[in-house]
Image (cartoon, rainbow, N blue to C red; front, top):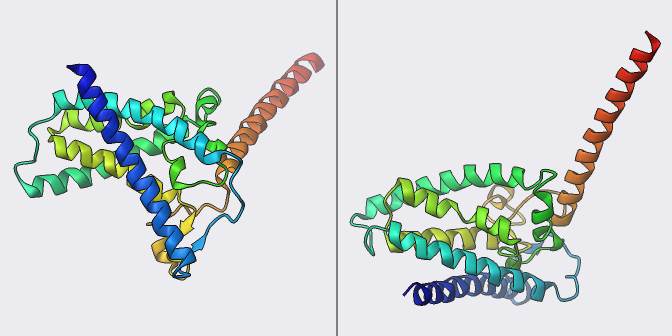
Length: 232
């Protein structure tokens, strides 16, 4: 039954979330406190109840991912890929596809209409690995759609689908971890953490200010045209 498929898929998605978010948090914490290796990107403390807020929204995101997984079962071709080379090519192709997809959808979420949804994610000013799935349901539905889009074009096995979902959890979890394991090797930093000098929450504020600036410039232009028409 679909209900049981959804339940199993939800437990799987929740397990992937806890495994990567919790595992990366624990690993980087041990690296910092025990081995004194690496550094944090943002030293500010977390907001009160921030982790609880992030996990609550993340569990909703897991439900959306579970629904996509149930649909993906109908699109999948077998449990395992027949050839390992095909699996490697699919993984590379998916990463390229997702990178392009995410770039444009992320720009979309910083527009005046969609910013209301993206604001949920940016409540985590000092991010953690638990922040990765902390999304409004609208953003979660759009962010995790690429797996199904890719599967509809390139036949993918069930294990391949789960692997792609794991990538969408692991890579952002590392990027949101607020940890830089390579402080002395700048050429490696892009592999592990976002290098923007702006704090996570400041980006949404900057985007809002830029839109207000554009609106003000447009209003000034209209006023100039009106004054010019009156003077003629």
